[in-house]
Image (tube, rainbow, N blue to C red; front, side, top):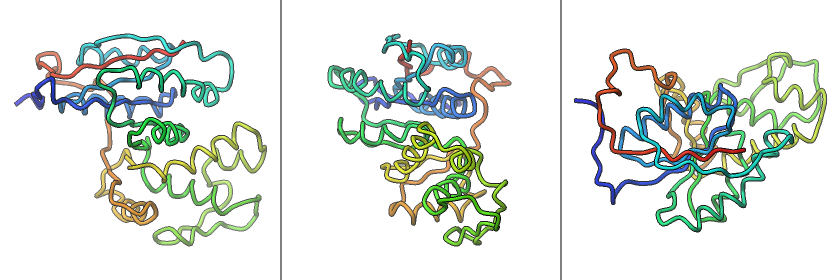
Length: 256
């Protein structure tokens, strides 16, 4: 058994994957991409030039069918720069003979929710951590409007945990201490994630079962999945990938 699913080419689903270009976000989603390829899925990956090195194991295991430039990201803050890809992605999607049937995008890319609504495919929000952190962060954005010296009780969350301000997620603390347009963008992007068609977490459901259930209740459906813990891409101690014939391919979209 190689663990590779042989799927006829004409029946392979095509999925677009859009990681956020930071290693802590990128590597888990690339490993999920690898797992999708092993199961007979064709995948298009949107990536920045600086992160091409991280794709080497993936492209070695799953031959790339094409490399396409989508334009220069420029010197704008990275989140704002990535939003500029909405039109190029839309044009590519509408001209493709077999366009993706779904998008899996990082939770920092909440704007892709509207993109998917526009082009008519479901978006799955990928969280590089577990549902506990996602729930804490969203509670902070929804309920805490100013700094406080008192401990914060997360009354809506399972077990009603309590944290001092200095233990809250750093991106939220920065938004309170030094508000900026970029941090407001992060807040707006975060609010779109629980509106997605589905949520995918880098966790095992047996580790965070109560928070997986909490997110299901929060979003109002059961399309909440624990797919981890995902290992680093290319971790293959017995060399099975080098001897396996994988039926899928990765199409690389390079930014810049």
